[in-house]
Amino acid sequence: MVEISPVVEAVLPLVFIGVYVVISINYFVLHTLALVALYRDSEADDVDPETDARPGVGIVVPAYNEEETILDSLPSFLNLAYPNTEVVVVNDGSTDDTLARLQEAFDLRQLETVPEDVPSRPIRAVYESDTRANLRVVDKEDGGKSDALNAGIWLTDKPYVCAVDSDTIIERGALFDITEPCFDRPREVVAAGGTVRVANGCTFRDGEIVDVDLSTRRVVSLQAMEYLRAFYLGRLGLSRLKSLVLISGAFGVFRTDVLREIGGYRRNTVTEDFDLVVRLHEHLRRTDEQYSVEYVPSAIAWTEVPETLTALGRQRRRWFRGMIETLRTHRGMVGNPRYGVVGIYALPFYVLAEFVGPLLEGLGFVLVPLAYAAGVVDLWFLLAFFLVTSGFGTLLSWYGVLGEALTDGGYTDAADIRRLLVDGVLENVGYRQWKTLVAWYAFVEYLLGGRSWGEMERTGLE
Image (cartoon, rainbow, N blue to C red; front, side):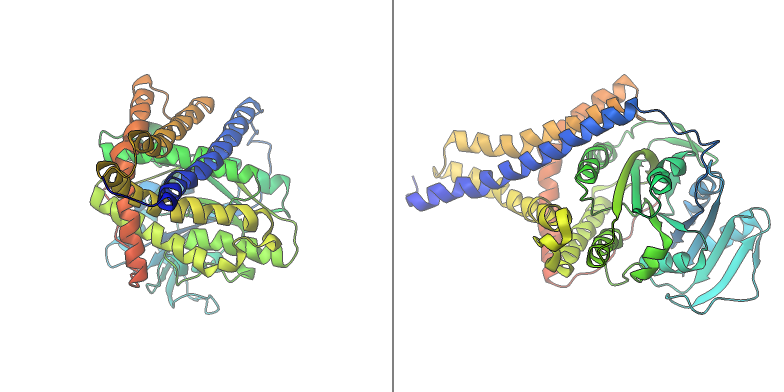
């Protein structure tokens, strides 16, 4: 048996279990707040979209080599049950037939003048559709997603901008839901995010979902489980604490004037959605404005997710690197009471739970079993470590399924619910450990200066 000092014996449990007890308590509180909010929202009266006047919304769709999905998702933006929208598709230097497919499908007519005062890479042409009055297509040089979004933000005259991904399909009434807080408190609410669900396995027709089903691919259904927990519980809990710092790039609404005030999206970041919302908090706290960033669970959009571990690993490495980058860029806000609950709670929690937590957990999955094998720790410590990490993680995943039940969400089939419950276990036994390996890989990439975006393999939606 290996001899160790009493100090090491005391510190080891504190590091590998104590930190996760703190993280778990925080997650439990957030998820419980979210479940209460979901229950109350489910009891509230629905908004009548026929009599509810809403502000204009410019829907900005950045597209780079999206010939496989652009014609699947675009009808969902054009056919929304919303009275005042403009769809701006920004073809960001695509090398495939994205622009050609748009021209053929919508009879695009090139405008004579090209705006020159847009803070983006040069715009080559602007088109309007002869068949859809609310469609505009911008063709520009490749500048990345942030650059494409900025072009759309400066080329719409609507007071609100809805930022979406080109492979996203928005439910027909979702724009009414997501703009409700903006309509109720127009000067206070500067941003609102909706729920993003996994589209793989579902059936769509003319931009509308007609059948909700879990994909038969386990790697996809595990992501569906993750999305339920992350949106319904994680973001809703943070929103209730007035500390929401992330709105998914797949579906979010922002006040156009405020986005222009902060210069739009930063182009030198790989997670522009996280960076943007943190910058909004920083700017508005510095100017002492009363503001709110909301999450609206009933506003639902569907997006295609990776179908292989290789593609998923690339995506998650980018997300992890971008999170580190954003936290480092805004490190002056972390723990700073000047930024309210965002500074003293939300950002420190991200540092602990989303950055330090996975790295520490990854070490624990290796070192704790080795320590047990070497006789450094006993069986109770080994079991406690896996209970706090994987066991409590399973409980939180099942919370996500409960949130789905409370909202009468998309997965209503009993077989789907049973599979989600099983996925809640598998997500924490095997998949969770794989994600800690991905986090370490991304951390090393970040230290070595890696900034690759990582291509997503599109298969198109049914």
